Image 1 (tube, one colour):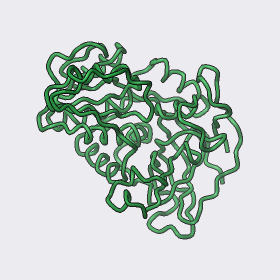
Image 2: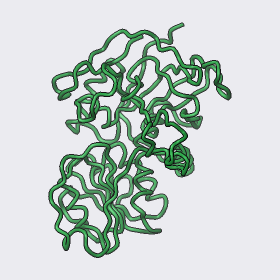
Image 3: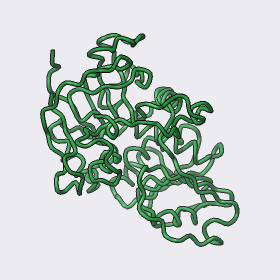
Image 4: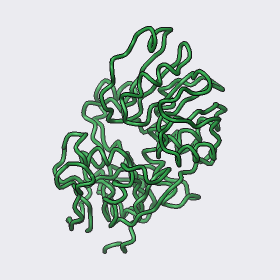
Length: 338
């Protein structure tokens, strides 16, 4: 099959990915073989490609926002049949036995594995997924529209939970890419006032079109104090900026898996009055199911830009350069293999 692999992690401008032929993957007994129809382009894929995340699988195929159909099932799989449409997301496997899994915090499992990092992902014609970590998908959305929901949407939802936004509260979003523009729609549907702070002019326009109360530069103060804020941009210098924008008792959640260094914080200016700084780590499957239900109920829609599978490296370059708003999605235009 055709697939992309990270040949040598490095700046995406130097083209660290190669488009190669790989053997068709064989699902384990508890896995599904999935024919990929669409795969979202996530900033985490950029971190894997550039080496911001350490190599866990040499020559890994990135991609973890996969919409596809079941092409085969392992012998221990039940409840899925060939032809079923499924989603494959970032969280691939946990041990199911540790203290974190036992208390419902499987996102913190020390034995967790991730699609497109520990195992080959969706920048390919086919991928595999443990059946119990696959998602059943609504029928009323096409593949391209669904793909970004499977990580950008789920992680944005997890970040919103971590930000502890009160009912009717004032939410600030720092950065407004694939995840933030979906998170904003959920927050707005729940009655929040949303202020977007981002350097990108096109993203500011999209924010206002979606219903944000304001859209300004990333380093600018919002027009009113914030009850909660989420930092989506992987820019540590924005942490003190966002903390200063919080009202007393406010919470800042950092949503990215990678963040540049945070400068020293001034206690009185940025943390006093019981402000809180929280991180976000992956998601649970329950987060994913809850978000997909909310997205269907409230009509959450991704703004998408489609690229053929053969242009995955270009899509990552465009993501890094900020050449599109919303999210990019790779479309597999190759016929299924038999």
